[in-house]
Image (cartoon, rainbow, N blue to C red; front, top):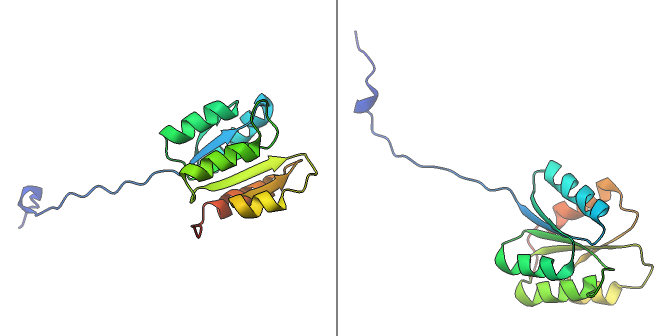
Length: 139
């Protein structure tokens, strides 16, 4: 009769770790901010939500994010300015800009490479946009 003795086995200990994708949400409307953070969190993202563009840009400079979701119209700095600053530091991160404005933003979208969503946001449209923003970009 053989008795199993685990001490006689060779083992190579490897630890496989994965990380959740990280999202940064920037919006001055605390209700929209909370809703977006909750949605992205429920979809498996590790989310940082901030209430203003200055704090959002500070966070972006200190943490690695896979996707940034930001409003267009905020006090002090527009969402276009936020996207421009993000692109200055990282041309590969996915960026989603949302707005209730009917302004023509096609030129900025083409130049800066972001996804534009119009309010009111539809949850499935947002989910698809976030998923697509996570795909590798040609830079």
